[in-house]
Structures are given as structure tokens and as C-alpha cells.
Image (cartoon, rainbow, N blue to C red):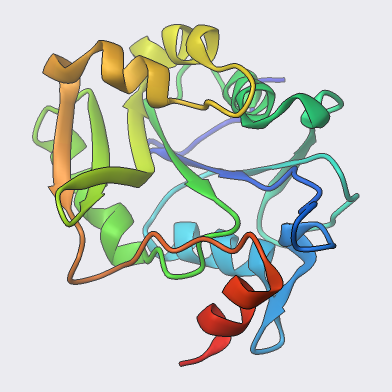
Length: 194
């Protein structure tokens, strides 16, 4: 497909799941009247990522400000969505920030910290919370193929990142974001509170 970019890292929002435990596709869930997919796209835009690619699957979604890529293999898990998103990016895309649609407390400030690590020479960067690696993550273009090859089932970039700790800059983000995800109606209720 080869979506063009403008020199900055692309943003890749994985939004294909059906939200089985939640009872509805997470991308369509609203917090404060804003769909999670729109929140994620806005966050990546605010962090300066371009283009923004949203990988969909269980639900057909139109998303302003993003290129939508449908993953027909979405039932197999996040790995196929990562592969679909990476394959949609142009060969000259320098890097990508990968975020998950169900983490509404991940912020543009966290993504900007990953970008700063990349600008300082890191070939991969991962946000950490309480010292533990979580999302979002950034991967430089030369590692797209290996990251895609290691993605399977519900494992996205984790296999690649664990296999190459020497490439990965860990970026503390506790003070600007949180990795809490929405899997159940109780999670949604908790994360909907200000």
C-alpha cells in the first residue's frame, strides 16, 4: 500500500478486536462522548506522528484524520493487526509508534518521550510504568520486518523487543501517562472517571 509520510514517525493504532469481555468492539466505546479510536488518533496527532494508521477488524470504522486498514485476520489476535499496519507503511517511513486503542490514559507526552529517545539514536523505545515495559512502543524502520515476523496470536511487538534488549531504550512515563486498559465493563467504568 505504501502510505506516504512527512519525515516524522508514523502512528499505528491497533483497534481491530471485538471486545469479547466488554461486549462491544473497544474502538467504538465512548468516554466523555469521544470514541476510543478517535481519542487514540488525536493523541498520536498531538504527539506529531504522521501519517496515522488505524487497523480495524471486528467493526467497520471511519476515522477522521487517519488511514484505515482493515485486517481480515483480526480474530487471530493482535499479531496479525501489527503485521497489517506495518505492511501499510511506506518503505521510506523512518519509524512507527504503536499504540493500543483500549488504553485511554496513554498520552501525547508519553509518545513525545519515545520520539525523543528515537531522535537521540534509539532504534526501539518502550514506555515503562513502575519500571515495567508496556505501551506505547516505537520501532525504527529497519526492524519492521523482524517485528512483524515475531508477531503472532496476541503477541505484537513484544517478541521482537525481548529478543533485542540492546536496541531498546526504556522510557519512564509514570508521571505523564498510565497503561490501564479497558477489557471489562468495570474497567470502562473505572477509566471513565476523571
